[in-house]
Length: 293
Image 1 (tube, rainbow, N blue to C red):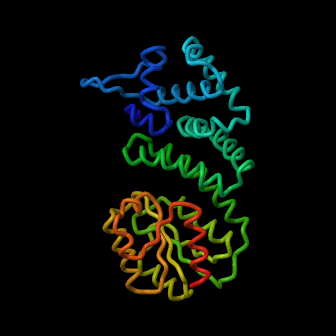
Image 2 (cartoon, helix red, strand yellow):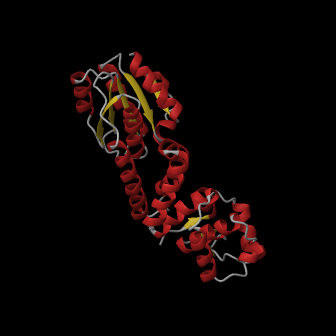
Image 3 (cartoon, one colour):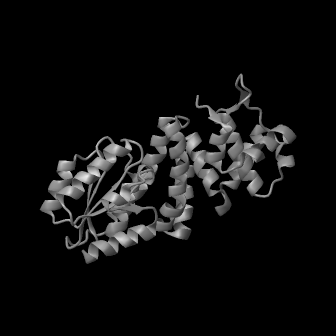
């Protein structure tokens, strides 16, 4: 069973560690285990309890009242709350869906956001933050791989549906999208693919673990103006940088754009003329750069 430190809980839920300690000491809502050095540790059930408490508290139920409720009563109230359209509880619902492998809850939460905000804002404002939270803990080994795969596949299905709705643009403005060898986290790149196609760029999605030779072949064959990538965890910074340097060396005019957590740690990306993708504004800049190239 996964084990979380209080900092992990804070990262996942957004609830301050100080608040969690108050819930434990003043209201005895939580009873975490402790290591020999007195460090609090929480299991998956504790995390679910904290999420349920946060959901009820956000809906207006005082912590003092929640502390008097049984686990069954809390679960029932949360289930009733989830039947309502409540934007204040979206992140908690997504995390509960992750912990409980609850497909219906996750889909209905996405449906609510997409209905109100549209797909672009749903992904950039909600799913990106959500994936960043669980990504940090996945790298630390405190999120079970099965949970990460479960949620990733549901998001992938949503992305594929939106991409398939778009007509293929003319091959006038071409970009090549790829993940470096040994990188398998493709959700960010899939969103770039969606955004580019929606805005008239013919993007070739080469996908996971693509050799540099294959990228260069596609650049030449289709007279691509840009190469776009993303990297989360599959390769180290030097390997990632070397792959991009090889592409830049082979074609000095090519536009290089890169996103993902690994790109954020590459301090000297500017030396390779790599443009960072951190927001939709950066993607809009990419669209305009390709059309002007």
